[in-house]
Every structure is written in C-alpha cells, then in structure tokens.
View 1 (cartoon, rainbow, N blue to C red):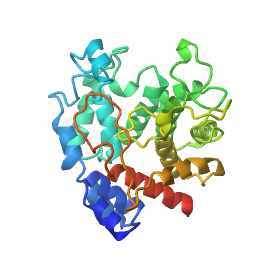
View 2: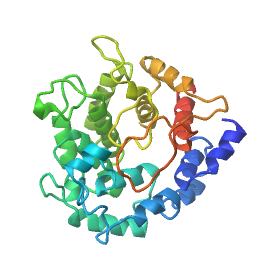
View 3: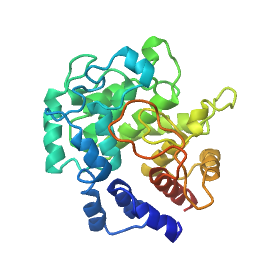
View 4: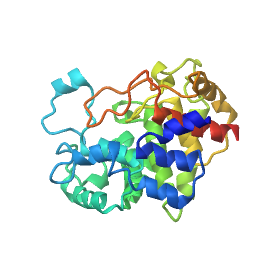
Length: 314
C-alpha cells in the first residue's frame, strides 16, 4: 500500500480508519479500539443513529418500513431504512454494541421491534435463511442468544453444502446470495460460542459450495452465474459478489485456496492506476445514508480489496 493510498484511506470516515489501522497497519489494539469507538458518534454511523425512531428502531419496522407500499418497491427497489438493514450496516461499519447509546437502542429493539412476517421479537429472527443468517450475526454482535436460529440454519443446509431462500418454493440447490449471508452469520456465532466445531463443519461445507464454483461460476457449464457477482458493491445488503466472498474467507482465517485464484484476478484487474479501487454498484433502494459515489474511487472497496490481497499474497 502506497503512502498516498494510506493517507487517503485514513482521511475517511472512522468506520474506514479503524479497519485500516487494524487490518493494514497492524496498529496497537488500544488505538484501534479508540478509533472504533467513534463510529456511532461521527460521520456515517452518527447519521444512521440520528435516523432512529423514538422507540429506538428505524422506519418503525423490522424489515418493511412503515407506509412503504408495493408500488414504492416497484419504483424504488427494496428499501434499506428499517431496523434490520440499518443494524446490519452499523455492525459492518464496526459500531460498538456496548456503547451506552447503542446498547440502549438494542435493549428497546429487542422487545419493541417485531417482524412483519410473524410478529415475533426481533432477535428471534424470521423464516428465510438469507435473513436469519444475518440475524445470527446480529445476535453474536449484540450479545443475544442466537442458538435457536443457528440450529434452524444447520437443519436447513442443503446436500450441496449451501442454503437457498427459495426452498419453500421448490428450489433444490443452493444459491450464492443466501449461502454468503448464512456463512457470515455462522462465522460470527462460531467466534462467540464455547462449542464451535459443529458450526465450523457446516461453514466449511458452505465454503466448498462456493469454491467448487470458483466463487462465481456455474458448476454445470462454467458460465458466470450473474455478471453482478463481478461488480464491487457497498453496502452489500443481501447481495453476493466476489469481494464479499474473498473477504469472508480472509476474515474466518482460511488459507488461500487455488480455486479462488480467478476471483483474485478479477479483483486485481479492477485496481486503478493510482492503487485505489472504484465503487461499481450500489443496490437500488431507499437509504438513510449515501456512502460513496458509483464510478469514483472508494475507501470502503479499497480497504476491503487491500486486506484481501494482503491475506492472499502472504
């Protein structure tokens, strides 16, 4: 990483700076923690916290914002303003759940925000594995009991190793999108449970599903599953892309696998001459915060790309 790129990254939001310090500069843990503590009080995190409702949730909903209609969805795309996607963003940015401001919000959300699907409390999760995988991650982050959801997800793992939200509608093979959402949640829970072996075994099966397909190709034909999988996006929301998959493998401590080499080549090919990476896609839909501009150099993408390459090249 050049000094110019380093300085540029450190000139960004606290959510970027603390991760640069930890993942690229190997800064002392106390300095990283001090920077991370600023996430919900400045910049993007503060803007998300300021959008809260009086009940400490967002958009008066778990998933479907109050007053949002099917016509709004058709016109704007899936909304990202309700409690579930906002908490996912805060977790991903590094918000500290024990910060008194956020801890108070989480306590209120636990009982006052109910899922539209069945009316159950927020941390009990929903019915689709693509949602429940992320709720498990939120449980691990927020110190809530995610074991019932973990057990459910393990029971829903398909024979090919992954997961698919469309099983109840007849799907018999896994999907990249659902699988990455479940894997990230299981990884977070694995790291806080006293008996992680069963979870790690399920994770490895899901990783095999992705790796046997080179992280973006169909097993049957070798074709690219979806061109969007090759585009670098933030926030990822529920969507899969190769950078998300590579960053997952890095974060869970796997050794670089030769089957991911083509995905690494894709990532390298997108590097700009000045050493940065652009933001290529923002998933459409209403938001509280616009992070970065499509087509412009992105601190969030550059951070993630550099730490993936550091892992791979090591």
